[in-house]
Amino acid sequence: MRKLELLAPAKNLEYGKTAINYGADAVYIGGPMFGARASAGNSMKDIGELVKYAHRYGAKVYMAINTILYDEELEQAKMIATEAWERGVDALIIQDMAFLQMDIPPVPLHASTQTFINEPSKAEFLQHAGFSRLILERALRIDEIKAIRSRTTIGLEVFVHGAICVCYSGQCYMSHVTSGKSGNRGECRQPCRWDYDLVDSGGRKIIDNAHLLSVRDMDMSSHLEKLIMAGVDSFKIEGRLKDMAYLKNTVSYYRANLDRILHSRGDMLKSSYGDLVNENFASDPAKTFSRGFTDYYLLSNDKNVSNFKTPKSVGEYIGKVQSVSGKSFTVKTGKKINNGDGLLFLSDSESVTGTNVNTAEGNTVFPNNPDGIRPGMDVYRNHDHSFYNFIENHNSIRTILVDAELYLSETKVGLRITAPDGVTAEKDIEGVFQTAKDAENNRKKITDTVLKAGGTAYRIDGLRIIREDIFVPASIISALRRNVLGILDIKRLSLYKREIRPVGRYVTKMYFKKLDYRANVTNRLSELFYSECGADIEESGLEKQCGYKGKTVMRTKYCIRREIGECLRKKSNLRGKLSIKNKKHIFDLNFDCEQCEMMVVYVGKNKE
Image 1 (spheres, rainbow, N blue to C red):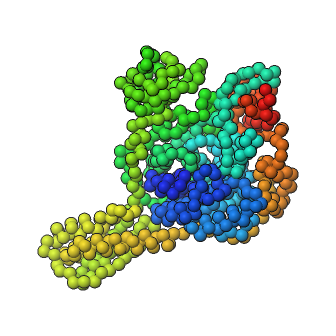
Image 2: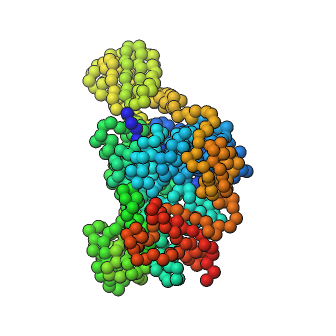
Image 3: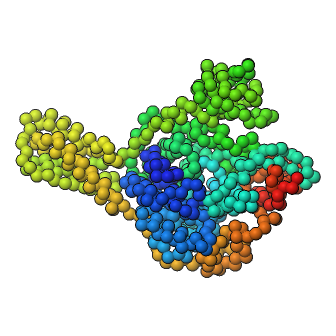
C-alpha cells in the first residue's frame, strides 16, 4: 500500500521531537556544518538522540548537508556524512555532487531543492546518478510534476507550506553579489525581501520603494489530493528558523488535512506510527507567521503572488478600519480582538503601519500607537495574543497502540505485547498464585493495571486475558508491564530498518553537455562527477569567481511585469527596458516571454 509522508522542519532536538509529537512522519534537520540554514546547525549527539526518538514511531530523520563545498571542506563533509550514518540518520539532503564521488557509507541521498529539479530530463538524470529522492523546484505546475513522475520511480518531495524562494532554487546569486554571503553556502541575506524602485530605460520611476521581489508564503493545503495524484510522496513544510508556535500549528494543520484524505481513500497510509491526542487544539496557519498565502504557480501563472508593501508577517485578515477617533479606532470585523494582539494596517496609498492593542472593547480598539491608522485601511492580525498563549502551553501526545495478551496460571504469569509493526516482546514471572474469590472484580483490577502505560510511547488498546480467575498482586503485573514495554521499545529500535543506498560509482550521461556557473561546481570532486557524465564545465560556480557585472543572478517564473498588469504576452504598452534599484545596487530585468521567465541581471553598485 502506498505510504505518504508529512515532512516537518526541525530547528533543533526539541523542535524535532515536537514536530513528531504533532504528527510529522519525518523531520529534516541541519548538521553541525554545511546546511543551507547556517544558523540552524546541530551537534551530531543531538541528531543521534532525535533519531532514537523518531524511530520509535517509525518516523525518519533527514540531515541537511546541502551547501556547495570547497575543496578544503571535502574531507570534513565526508566525516560528517559518515557520522550521520553511524548515528542512524535515514538520509542526507545534499546539493553538491561531490558526495557521489566520496567513499561514504550507504546512506540514501536526497537531491536538495537547491539542485533545481524543474523538468523530467534533470529528474531522470539524478535518479540514474544514485539519488533515492528528488526535492522538486517550488515553482512547478501540477502538469510538470506529473511529467517528472512519469519518467522516474524514486520518491518525489514537494514543499507545501512556508516561505518561497522567488528564484529557482540553487540559481539565486543576489545575496552573494550584494553581500558576499551566498545562499548556496547557507548564508542568504534575502535581498529578495529588500525594497527597490522600478524604473524604465529613461530613468522614470514606475514604482517607488517597494518590495518588488517579495512573494507571499506558500499554502498548498487545498491541493494536497492533486499533488498525491500527481505522484508526490512527501509533503514538506518550510521553516527551520520559525518559532515553536508556527511548528505546532502548521504540522498539526497538515496532519489533519492529510489524515482526512487518507481516511476517505483507504488505499494509502501515513508512513509512521502513532495516534495523536490534541485536545482543544484548532490549528490555523494564518495565526502564526505568514506573509499572506499563495499556491504560487501550481495551477497557472497568475499574478498577485507578491506583496509589494511588506516582506514581514501579515497574519490573518480581520476587517477594515471603520473610523478613527482620538486615541482609538473601530474595526468592521466578525472576529474578536484581544488585548495584546498585534495589528498590521495596509492600504493602496498609505505606507505599512502596525501597533499592539492595549485594550479592546468589542470593535473599538485602543492601540499602543495610533499613528498612520486611517479609515478604510485593511486590518490584519499578525499576533493573536490569545492563540499564542494557548499554543505555547499546549503539548500534543503521540502514542503507539499495541495489543497485549496476559497469561495467568497457579504457577506463572506472562505478558506478550505486539506493536503495529509486528514486533513482539514477552516475559514470564514464576510464582504461586491463588484462585480469585471474585473473578469479575479480579478481571477488572487486572485490566486496569495492565492498561496503565502512561509515561511511555505506548498505549495498550486491546487486551486478552487467559484465566481471569487467577489473583495476581497489582505490583507484579505493573512490574511485568513496565518490563515488557521496555523490552519492546529496545527491540523495535534495534530492528528498525533503514533504506540502504547501493554502494558503487554511478556513471550516467548528462542530459545536456555544457555547464556554466549555474551548475554550482566549486570543488574538484563535483567537477570530476560531471566530467565522468560527459559534460564540459565552462566555468566554475559564481562563488569562486571575481566580477559579476552582466551575470544573471536570478531566474524565476515570477514576473514583475505580470504582477503590475503589464504582461508582454498580453500586448502591454509598457515595452521599454526595466530595472530595479535601491541605494546600493542596480539590476536590469530581462523577460523570456516564450518560457514565461524573468531574469535579474547584475549591473553594479548604485553610484547616485
